Image 1 (cartoon, helix red, strand yellow):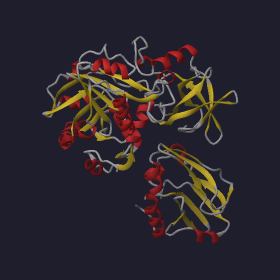
Image 2 (cartoon, rainbow over the protein chains, first blue to last red):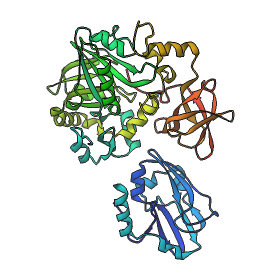
Image 3 (spheres, rainbow over the protein chains, first blue to last red):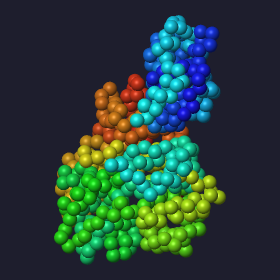
Image 4 (cartoon, chains in turn yellow, brown):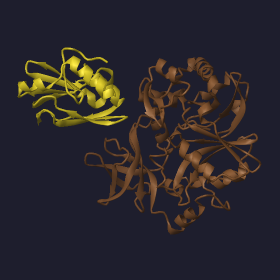
Length: 129
Length: 362
C-alpha cells in the first residue's frame, strides 16, 4: 500500500499536502482501491468554507458511495475540474492527478489531529481486519 | 468456516481482490470492474462460479418430481435442454431461482451459492420416496466463459460441435479430455458457456482455457463485474431483486411459471395473486440525473413513496445510471417519472428491459 511520507492523513482515508498554508486534498490509494472504479465525484464549490471533519463532497464508485471529508478547516479555493470528465484519475493517480480540492487553511493547529504516513499505514491494516 | 474454490490460487496469482461471498472467498475484481465489463462485452472473460450449488435428481419419476417442486414445465423439456425456474414456498414467495438441466438419466439443478443449504433442506423436505437427491456442490467446479468470442475459445478444446448447441441447451461431453456438462448459458447476456466438472480437473481446465483464449485477450472476471453485467440485462439476483417476500409474477418472470401444470408448490398462492391483480412490479429505471441508485433507496412518484430500489449501479455498457426496484401500481409502466432518494430526490424514468440491447447471446 502506497502512503507517501510527505503527506498527512485522516481516519476517513483522505490525504493532504500542506504547503504555504494551502492544503491539497484527495483520497488515498487505499481508499480508491477499496471503493473500486469511481463513477463520479460530487465536488464542492470553490469559495465554500468548510470545517475539519465536515462532509464536503461525495465519491460515487461502482462498489460503494463515500463522503469526501474536509481534512482541515478553511476556504475551498480550487477544485479539480478534470475529475468531472475523468473521475478515474483518482483510481489511476490517487496522490497526483487525482487530487480533489485545495483549501486555504484557517486553523493550522488542526494539522495535529491528522496522522503521519506510518500511523496511517497502521490504520489501514486495522481497517482491513 | 469460509470455503475456497479450486481456483483460489489462480485468483491470487492474478491479483484478484478476495472477499467473503456466500460462504466462499471469491474474487470481487481483478484489473478493474469497468475494464472487466468491457472485456466480456467485446471479447471474452472467465468467471469462477464454483460457489454455485448442484443437486442431482435420479429415479424413474424425477421429471414429475422436479415439475412438482419448480414453477416451469419439466415435462416439456427436450433431452439436454436447460431451463430457468423457481422454487416457491406455499405462499408464492421465492425460495430460490435456479437452472434445471435435463441430462441423460438424471436432472441437475443449479442453485445460488447463498441458498445452497436452505434449498437442499427444502428439496429434501418435499422429496418423494421414489426419487434420489444428492448435493454434489462440494465436488463440482464451475467456470463461465462469456463473451462474443467464447465459442471460438472453447471450440479449440473440444471436438463437440458447439455451433450446433442452441441457447439454453447442454451436452455431456469431453473438453480438454475431461468429462463435463457444458451448456450454452450465462448471466451476462453475451454468448457463452458454463462448464461443470470435478474439482480435480480445475487447474488443467483453467490453464487450457487461458491458453486457448490468449489470442482474444481473455482475462478472469470478478463478482463486481458479474453483478453489473447481469443488471444491464435485467437478470435478477436472489437476495436483492427476488426474495422470500416476492413472487415470480411481481418479478416479471411469469414466463417461467406454468399455471397449466396441475400442481406445483406455490401454485395456489400465485393463482390468487393473479386474480387479485398485482399490487407492484419489478421495473427497470434509468436516472435522468447523475446519481447511483443502490439497494434499499426509496422510490417516489407524485410525492409519495411507491417502492424501493433492489439493485442499481453505473452501467459502463450504456453509460447510464440504472436500477431495478419494486414499484406500486399504477406507477410501474414505461415512461413513468420517478424520483429516487439519493442525497435528495433525483429524477428517474421507468424504461423497458433490457438496459443493454446489443448483447450477443443466441
